[in-house]
Image (cartoon, rainbow, N blue to C red; front, side):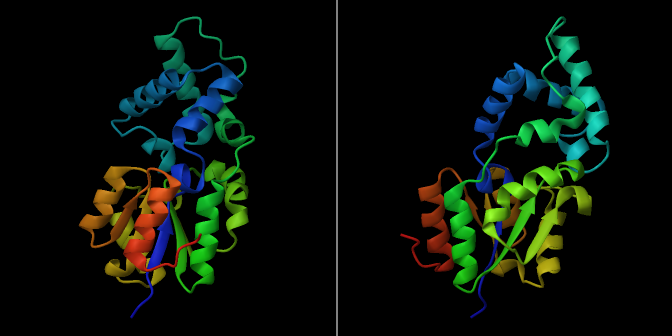
Length: 218
């Protein structure tokens, strides 16, 4: 029997929950989660793309994206104080002080130690790599890293799942995705993968054990 290839999402799985990261950014800058999310959507709408797609696909640079966010924020909120926000170098400020989700990092190491191949399948940003890779460094080496900004396609596009399986030399049925977004899990399943919709650590680890036979961590 072929051992499954377990793919971990970064944001919201190996990292803290996305909502927690937005709240942390609010504390750093004064920009509320609602304001920031709307600005991300407004800028992406200008390019007729989903939120975050322009930067996660490398269509724009981090600096261009940051300037777009500033325009969008000031358009909706005239007089907004952006003095604490470093929007053109967004990643450095966003990831400042961020540490990994310890239980999912432990799960990745545990899966590898038990003979499973492991990978990271992430929608991410070229300029953010120096900031997010240190967050997951405690997980150690992975067999494959597939990053949207480097391959030009992002979840939930079905092509990224085909590309990831091919990169790993794995059959789709041997791939298992752990992701905090239901649409990404659904897209993975449509390509023949199995998937765990991450909602919390205990649920995700239980679902992963059930799908893969990974021994219980505790």
